Length: 88
Image 1 (cartoon, rainbow, N blue to C red):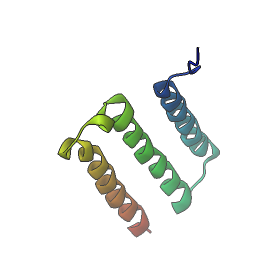
Image 2 (image 1 turned 60 degrees about the vertical axis):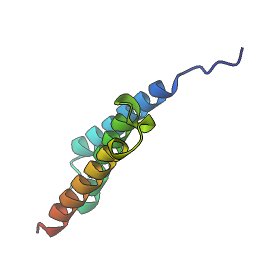
Image 3 (image 1 turned 90 degrees about the horizontal axis):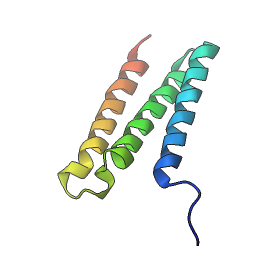
Image 4 (image 1 turned 30 degrees about the vertical axis):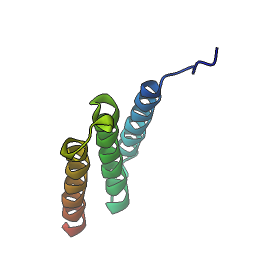
């Protein structure tokens, strides 16, 4: 009987909660500047990708639907990081 203690979706959920807690901690610490902003943005984009892959079931889909979330995350991340870097 070689069963895993926790299912993969439970591990992903725990990772999402950890990333959320770290993001909250960054906000509560009052960290400012480009590096904390990029870190929070990176966490948000990673969370979006994990949700798309594991909870929306797009990891097992073939063709263009598999890449919709990936392209959206990359496009959104590029635009937002450019906006962060261009603001004084």
